[in-house]
Length: 594
Image (tube, rainbow, N blue to C red; front, side, top):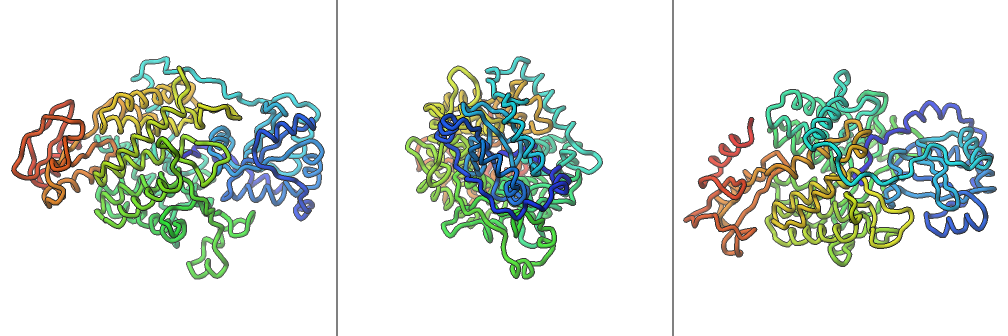
């Protein structure tokens, strides 16, 4: 999942923790934690027990606190031993369960009847007293309490699309905090799709959107680790000064990409600096010897202990005390996110080393995580899966690499990923694509997830522009129909930037630049670099060297030229040729500026 949005619901635990006594904190835990499996539910039926799931994140401070205090409390331990089977799941390792319960934050506590019926779902840290009351209450009365069933959403929007778009735009801007700055009021976090949408609006001359984007990016720098680089996940308290210190890959990738795009938009080195700091952090702390990224770095040096004093130290002071735990799992999804973020950084800097870094990671994932037919495993071995998020993230990475390098092999891999998604995650006549494989029986039943479907709509729409294949456009349309359905977005607050971007990219032609010329021609190379530097992600940049074969979609509209030339194209027609990089830059400025 990209895909922890609006989920920072456990922060209230900071006050609740004070209510927990220390009496049980040192008690030895007798809880036997099991992995999630259907066999657990079969055993629960045989023994007439409930199933308690602790859905946690290995980097999560309050998950550590709950383990150290609540799950060492004698009363809680006794109740679990008597009537429960306890399941512990790392949400990074199980995207299917993380997507299903993401609204409950981490830790999420879910209790099931033996038949899999959800009885209770709770968000965030639960002190021992409330936890014991919940466990005893379920034993006394196992009736489901206020749970959502995951009922199927309608196959498409019920209101005209433009009306939905207007509603979503209003919804997005209502979520902006004019007092503290940035989107959101209780937690401060950079949401990539929201800021990208504002950047696009700024490029069309919307001064209010530009101000919001600039303010958010400026304040987000408060969450940039000044010593090691990298960004903390978010800040609590409705301000930008109370960070939670975990560094998860979603946030590194989104911030890296957005600061690179902002630098391309405004040419301000102040935006390139954070992008480089995040890149430096990834290279120093979260990159394996094979060139692929790990998953996260813990918030805590000592699990369960706040680390503000630690992060106030300089590099030497921190290293003297130790390094917070790094989750060294190598997931295809997380690597896809980072590859796609490195591409705009490589495009705007022109640095071959960054391009090579992205390509090296992509080749490793192909060699170690690929499945037959174009899909990808999450980890070396998956407990469930395949998951949509891994194949989608790698598909988007391949498409980005194709535009950056013009290597047709990357486009082949992107198309194979799209074909795998269509074959394994569709829902029959229903719109939207499920998080897990729908071609086989699984528990729990596969359901669609918002961020994955917005990402899929954007990926497939962009892929269709490159390939001209109608099945790619149909894939985008089916994902978008689900995303724009009113029940999907009605309660998402301002987290609807992805839907707005996806609808625009499906409905509108991108800025299309075709470079004609030999790949070893310096004039063609310079014009290609200018085209890549366009700040908007909704662009199609192609470089056709006639020696390599026919035009990308076998178009016959380009004239023979004595030298390199660039064309701006739309709706099957192209401009007069431009023959040098400076002239192309001026032409693109006229086309893309309001």
